[in-house]
Length: 513
Length: 75
Image (cartoon, rainbow over all chains, first blue to last red; front, side, top):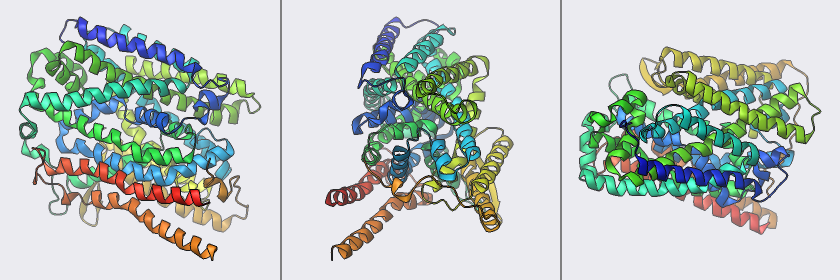
């Protein structure tokens, strides 16, 4: 946002954007299937092998917003922002141990969404509806934030107005509509190549120019470099840090777009192999987090050239400003293309995942139960459009802060589906109405905690036995959710004589393919 | 005979599953790594230690993966 357009950077950026647009439409011919079937359009025919799944999940989970927001948090808050690293360490044991079960049962029973599974397991359309609605509501602001990621780099290129964002949006909507999940799977390969090259260049070139890592860390200041330690009767930042990592790790694979990525793989072994291979992205994420400190060391926030950008986007402008300051124009175009394309991949998958939920668990369940499979797929395609238009209106019409706030709430909300989905993979002991009560209690308390924090973060201080324990609101509200679910299930199971309905069998959870 | 062998194999496999909890235990002990020293190439301990756990976390999954793979092949 230096005021004038950087033509070299813009040309490189536009060239890559054009390339992925062609790829997106071409993807409909890749491993050709009948794109009027929902499992073909919305799950890529469940045929993605280890390598494609690695690219797809990598593009899905490590989003452009992550690449902008994590260093921004380091830039603003220091050590606390590094929670992204333990978070991504803890997520893979969970993926490895739990999600092959979900894949197996979904494959055996033809589930497209997590709510489909809940419907079969607990025989409750209401519980499935709650899971589906939570997924949709938690994902919508996330899509909006991907568009914010694109907006930031477009502004960095010196372009003004809303037209560039609209063009990016129309392209995204059109190829998602025609190619379904195959489009982001294919584009993810290009996105990864760009991201890895950018990261490697950044961690070699920038520290060399700034005088080494020791100097970079020294510029941050000793108070921000570590978490504040525990003092008398207060656990300090440390408990907030690790509960944030833990809660985020448990929440991640409950998001509809992550479930879509898992279910589109061709076998349960693909998931296990990916739990081993996906940490390669975490290394990149850790290095990207350090870019926040490099932006501090480079002093970009004090340079008048970037003042307007910081004014418009806050700390989220730290990484674009750092690239503009440190890289030659052509490479700025390359790096910005990496971020923008990194936003298109998850935005496509998220809108497909929301569309799957709407179609399977709302439209087919409540509006038109006898619809044909072609009609089902048509509804999903239209729903993916509606979801994206909603996200676009969100970004253009409302202050950016709303999207960020809602995404914070989204993390707290989505984790409330954990008892029904994850614990449900292991036991049918819980009563669906008990789970619904627990879900409502968790949603409500989590939201109250976030409101009382005024959306200035998600660490809510609990007071336990005279100790102040700062804790991620998602985790504490989840504990309440599980407690309420268990107590209510105990009571209902004791009183009720209706037999449990469960359309899955134990063997369904272990079957391989 | 073959049945007993299978049961023992299964128990050993269950024990291997404890490996999944190792990163949770080590990373939950925040005070053990919330410090600057020793630095590595100018990077404070807090940062490189947690980055190291990305690699260690994946390495801990490997024995589990191989064990289950071998089990699947025997069947």
